[in-house]
Image (tube, rainbow, N blue to C red; front, top):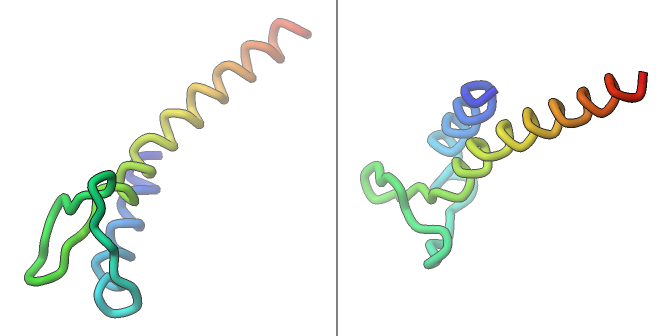
Length: 70
């Protein structure tokens, strides 16, 4: 799930950042890599690292609860 989310998100950033949109760098969203003059911020990638973990743990919890009911 991590590669499924983070991979396409990184590809979209590499193709669109500086062409279609541009990220604003803040203290809470710093640049994690720079390609030429274009900086790529950490928050979009961090979301795709954390979201699959939260989803997986939530799914396990729901599955255990449903199994206990039946």
